[in-house]
Image 1 (spheres, rainbow, N blue to C red):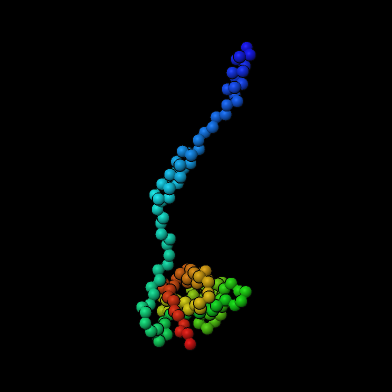
Image 2 (image 1 turned 60 degrees about the horizontal axis):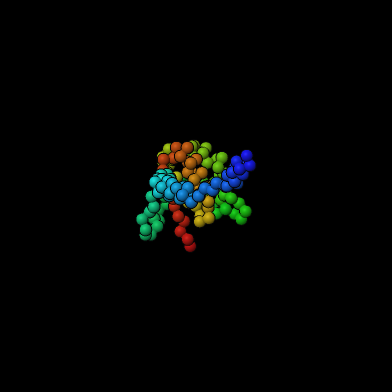
Length: 143
C-alpha cells in the first residue's frame, strides 16, 4: 500500500505546463489578418467649390451675407451679423425664413480666421432648414 500512495503523490506533484508561444502567434496572425482585410468607408463631407486662383472679384456678391467675427477672449463663438444686424443662433432660422425669395437662393458666409468650424456648420444647417439653396464662402481682403 505504501508503494501505491508514494506513486500517487509523485504524480500529483508534477505540474502541467502549457507553451503559450503558438497561441500568441495565432492571435497576432488573426489581428494582422483583420487589420489588413478591414475596409474603411470615406467620411461624408460638404462639397465646397473653391474660387479659381487670381484676383478677388471686386463686385459685391448677391444674396444674403452673414459675417462672423473672431471670438473675443474667453468666448466660444464670434459675433454674427446678418444685413448689418447682430443675430444669435435662435434668430437665424426665422430671419432667413422671412427673407424674400429672390435673395433666398444664396447665403454667403464671411468668417474671420479664428472662427470655429462648429459655428459655421451650425449656420449652414440653420440656413438649409430655412430653405436656402446654396451656401458660399467669401473672404474679406486684408488691408
